[in-house]
Amino acid sequence: MKKILNTPEGYVDDMLSGIYKAHKDMVAPVSDKLRCYHAVKKTPGKVGIVTGGGSGHLPLFLGYVGQGMLDGCAVGGVFQSPSAEEMYEVTKAVDGGAGVLYLFGNYSGDILNFEMAGELADMDGIKTCIVVGNDDVASAAKGNESVRRGVAGIFFMYKCAGAKAEQMASLEEVKILAEKVGSRVRTMGFALSPCVIPEVGHPNFTVGESDISIGMGIHGEPGIRVQSMMTSKEIAQEALDTILQDMPFQPGEQAAVLINGLGSTPLDELYILYNDVAQILEQKGIDVFKVWAGEFATSMEMAGASISVLRMDEEIKALLSKPAHTPFYSNPQL
Amino acid sequence: MTQVDKDGLIKILGCVAKVMTENRDLLCKLDAEMGDGDLGLTMSKAFPAAEKEAIESDETDLGKLMMKCGMKMNSAAPSTMGTLMSSGFVYAGKALAGKTALSADDFAKLYMLFADGVAARGKAQRGERTVLDTLYPAADTAAQALLDGAGIAGIASAALAGAQNGLEATKDMLPKYGKAAVFVASAQGKIDQGALAGALFIEGIRDAVAG
Image 1 (cartoon, each protein chain N blue to C red):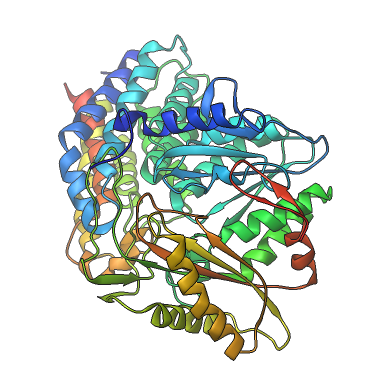
Image 2 (cartoon, each protein chain N blue to C red; image 1 turned 180 degrees about the vertical axis):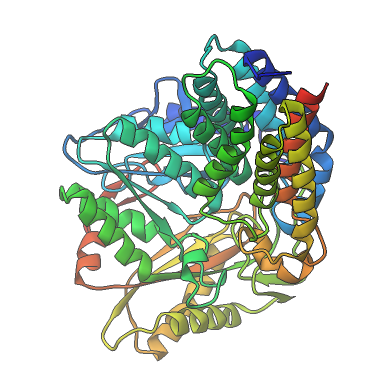
């Protein structure tokens, strides 16, 4: 293992200390608890949105805490859920009196802990509800969406739910909107190399030197199959065939596209991939509203990419277009 | 032992911590075949943290102390199994609040309360190849032993026998939850690693009250 760190045990806390120092005008820990991360700015009466999950995926999850998106994040160890108590601390810090939405990826450890945090918050009179991202189309068959994993597509849920909350919508309204966006986004990922958890020190799964793992999860969960490396065109074709079969577009519906790098794939390659994605979408007559390309949900130093497609409607378009500004992500009014 | 007081609870947590630590590598190995391979690490972190909390806390209400230990376990090991086990303590602690010592009757009930707490958090039932498939059989045999007039040591031994039978039975069960559900075929004929963690928990309790 060759990583820039001091000790493997200090990996997460040292990273967090760096982020707090670099962006102290925007984010802060709850008292001295580094793993309880929240936006400095708090709007009374606004629904709070809290996310959380394991480290090792930056800018997911904490990177979307900021203006126009999320209010707080509970930060776990690398690929580990944060504790219920950490989630509860963040909940108390961000609650503006209108309740708190828990919006995070569909992983059992995170779900159990957020449920427990919600029970603790309830005893304090803070209303919470849960919406999970389950966009990974490769992780379970159609009809079994509730067990699909959450991956990069949660970015669209954060963006739209955050904008909805800024319009002072109620907790119920923000929840319904987040669920709607979640039901209209699909992602498919491709891994070219494994990643190393600092405290483990070596990869705990492998991807062969000349292979590609199709549908592998962002913790190395097995995908659909492993085969010899494909071209960008073939990757784009397989991803879009799978996504569009699972979620057919109606004529005239626009798409938003997210081309996400998993950690050590150059932007160059992401745009080579988008070139092929764009061509296929054009052939299918699907108009693209906007494309995001870059690192949005990584898996340490894993090489590879994921393609997310969002089926737009007028409401989603208006919310996506709202400005957002966090230490890791910004867009002007679109 | 005719009742379990605070010292008894500390001893139980200590013995469970010891059994989990001794079996850390086995739990990790079984988990790596079916899941993400960290079960031994999380269990050997969770119970020592609970033991430490029980020793350091000046809480004398055993129910409240169990809740505190559960929350501490969750902070030390917020993985799926760490959270499920901590939920067992929180749930049982709520039900036993106000008691400074557990009678044989309370002690037998503790097994069922713990299993119910885990089931409520995990939204699972017995027979689905999970930790519940050792916790519930242990609770059943513990309840029967109490009816048969056993004391605390007898109840704990009966619970362990129940857990071991339950563990054996998981070999024929199909996984429904977690990453194991992806590897249905390879689970056939093997014990479930979560159920093993449950059986080791029951074994640790027996070790604590038998001696």
